[in-house]
Amino acid sequence: MLIDAHCHLDDAQFANELDEVIRRAADAGVSAIITAGVDVESSRAAVKLAEKYEIVFAAVGIQPEHAAAFSATAFSEIRALAREPKVVAIGEIGLDFHYADGAPRAAQERNFAAHLDLAAELGKPVVIHDRDAHRELMEILARRNGAPRGILHCFSGDLAMAHAAIELGYLISFAGPVTFQNARALQEIARQAPLEKIVIETDAPYLAPHPLRGKRNEPANVARIAAKIAELKNLPLAVVQQTVRSNSIACFGF
Ligand code: NI
Image (cartoon, rainbow, N blue to C red):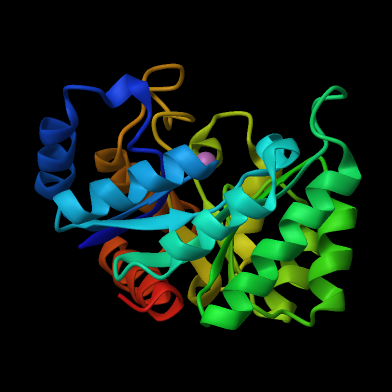
């Protein structure tokens, strides 16, 4: 039994095919899928999908790329969605300094802080997106002393950052990139991080794991991430599956 801790089922790439995508996931042993919003509209869509499919749960929030759209009105809608019964997390939220013409850093930090406060207020975990913002992100998380708890989705930092995040109480989430053939550093992190601190995700429709790299990804493929972690850690697959599943359940409180 697997849990896909992060994906985007509202993506247009799944349109008209979602019933089959969900069925294939269930057939692959996936018992829960968390679909994350990136703005108000997709957060609304995530909640609708969670209402429609029993195994789907939602995370709601405004992703850093959309931080410029942050407003009192937008955030009050996120706040209302966050109280829906199948919303298990606030996300994805965080910092993204990858694109020079992305949302201004100050706007990103304001947006991120508002969502962290909301998660703390509601006692829900956060799903954190971090791209090329490792130092700034860790400073913010350290200042808050690891509250609210949550996962670093599609972890892309180095080993020292993984240790620091774990020390603060965060879980490290591995997606397709850990299976890529040139992903030596990330694989070393998966080897060294305690299994009790790891969750797995697909980030579908993005980041399809090896050997499907470049294709449209889907939650059924989370089984491939579990297999890769088991291989890297030289542990029985069943042990990895069970442990990362209980890590997700403890974090998201299904
Ligand atoms: Ni994502």
